[in-house]
Amino acid sequence: MKTTVRMRNFILLAAVAVAVVFLPGLLIKIGVIDAYTAQIFTLAGINAIMAISVNIICGVTGQLSLGQAGFMAIGAYVCIWFSQAMHFPLPLAMVTGALFAAVAGFFIGFPTLKLSGDYLAIVTLGFGEILRVIFVNLKVFTGGANGKRFTTILAASADIAWIVIIGTLAAVVIFLQNFLRSTYGRAIFSVREDEIAANSNGISVFKYKMTGFVVAAFVAGLAGALYAPFIGFVKPDLSSFNRSVDYLIYVVLGGMGSVTGSVIAAFVLTYLQEFLRFLKEYRLLIYPVILILVMLFRPQGLLGMKEFSFVRAWQRVTARRGAKDVGK
Amino acid sequence: MSDVLLRVDDISIVFGGLRAVGGFSCELKTGELVGLIGPNGAGKTTVFNMLSGVYTPTEGSICFTDARGRVHSVHEKKPFQLSKIGIARTFQNIRLFGNLTVEDNVLIAMHSQREINPLDAIFRTPRFYRDEERLRAKTLELLALFKIDSKKEELASNLPYGEQRKLEIVRALATNPRLLLLDEPAAGMNPQETQELMGLISFIRKQFNLTILLIEHDMKLVMGICERLIVLDYGRTIAAGLPAEIKENPAVIKAYLGEEAMIDA
Image (cartoon, rainbow over all chains, first blue to last red; front, side, top):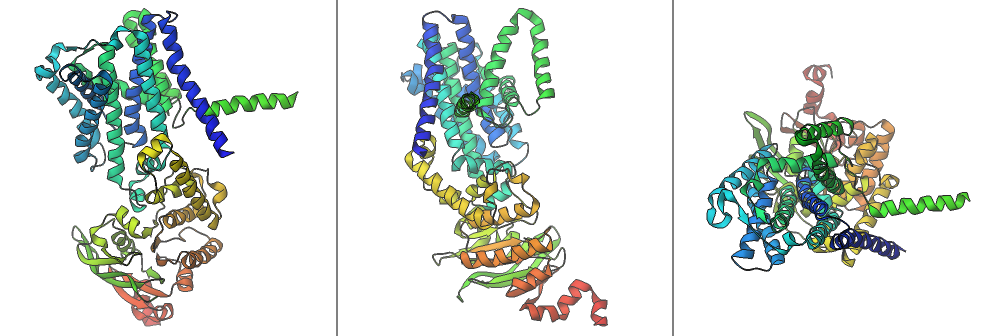
């Protein structure tokens, strides 16, 4: 009985993932979805991965990071360097970029996670800005303020870019959910809830704060390593404070602690920014108004701390159909 | 039964200029149920915090013998390490994971008993499901002992006060302790609930072969179930012995009721 339920959930999830990744990919290929729309939604996918990264720190471990874009920039530049200078194949260069970001996360987290309060926010804020200055001046690796060109297949064909980026997003969501809904995830949540109680119940507070931080840095690095080949051009501005705050907005709007909420918010807001272009300069006025309205009427974010579940949605649909049959 | 589980040797702790505990010593033998009493501000909770690793004593040493007979220096370890070798505690002002379910609260305490690695969790291997089922079954068993198994899906913060206290004891038991430190388990309970709690404490002590050190203000509970009492005042031990002796001890009466009560008596 239990295995059949597990099997059904697995098939349902796999079907959804395949549909989300490959169906639009096919539509882009045959030209039903135009390249412009495809580009917006693919970029939204990268933003969603970044939002997840910020959410791991803000929603899951209960801290505040204001420099998540710094890890993204590390992922982007390391990916470019390993691909161009070391001639790594692109997928391997991407993973290397993400790993470098994770290592950077470890070294940033090591001195700061032992402190409590706003220290992490201050340190990460400085981290992002310092990185930006380093990237501007480290011309050999980064091309300085003019940025670095990186032409790949992801920039050239919209359908492959969609499949790779949305595929990665799906993998990140699924693996992260699996991790968070295991004993490791519970340990991380317990640290967010009450450090002293977690500590007294056998949870190493520092270890699990660090785990959350390094995982978040890895995911941000992955987003950067997807961004560079997709946009085909990277500037040091990628690691600026403004970008970190953009990603934080997705998380606050989607609901802190809700991974699926971040994904939905990233897609909605990325599209909204493009959709409002017909308003010209007024766009900059409307966008914040929408954010303020959401915060007024739904301060916990779109999904709050809940997760959207395809399995639960499916159960609700089938239950309703069952009820209708009884009604007949 | 007479082997020493915990030996506390002359511990003191100083906060700034305040000597909160000065020269506290005691010995707990395996299977004992000992009460730690004293007026407000006597330093009882501070002693607990030192025994559970929250504070490090300024002077003195604490030695604890684990299940395999190895002796650990408690004062050199962090709380999560002490939890792993068998010291569990509850808190005076309940510290549950309020936004998590009752079941999750207990499962978290069993984190150290996992038999999986992170990859099992990420890829949902059969080993992950087996381990998860094992831990959940054990959780349900423990919750059932305290009759709160029907509320496992509820958020811990939504439980009534008495059940929150019980859940905290369950969570402490879930770490497989040898020594259980209970900080005012009956605080805020009505006499009937206290009575029930007394029964439960005696029961779990036998069931899990526990040694219990208990802080309590409710004298009926303390005198009823404790085999031995230690009385603290101003951070010093003023008396120790059987409940009947403690009741008659002039120093204790003075600490609780003041000098004049002594003269009247």
